[in-house]
Image (cartoon, rainbow, N blue to C red; front, top):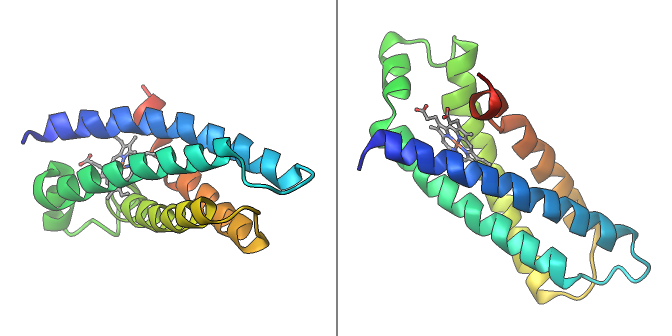
Length: 145
Ligand code: HEM
């Protein structure tokens, strides 16, 4: 498997995740502020698809990180992985935060699938997962020059 192919797949799925996450946020807000607090089909589906894409990203990302990434290897060998802010963000903070967000999303998907009404604890879980993901997102690498 070629590193560039994996990086391009990782980039492609990133756009999909932005789309499904936006739908997830709208669906969550609608449910939160809806009169009944009933978990809607839109919230269930948007959580499911965001979670699936996150799992795919985690798989591609971890394989890239540990087996292919020339940047990670170079930073490790030069001993600057944690010293250099860009390397630390790309190869440590980004993967760690995204894995935590993926775990939280997996729990949320299970809860939404098996319950009828939204609970405060799950909203808190989403309020941790979403900013974590938005912070760790590689905005400048995806949309920058
Ligand atoms: C869940 C675990 C994840 C891991 C382990 C991971 C790992 C990585 C690694 C190692 C890189 C840098 C590759 C390199 O330049 O050598 C990277 C870049 C990137 N990741 Fe992730 N990632 C994960 C999740 C995600 C998610 C969920 C998204 C999007 C929502 C995402 C979007 C991106 C983007 C846009 C880049 C920059 C690509 C580029 O520079 O062309 N990643 N990721």
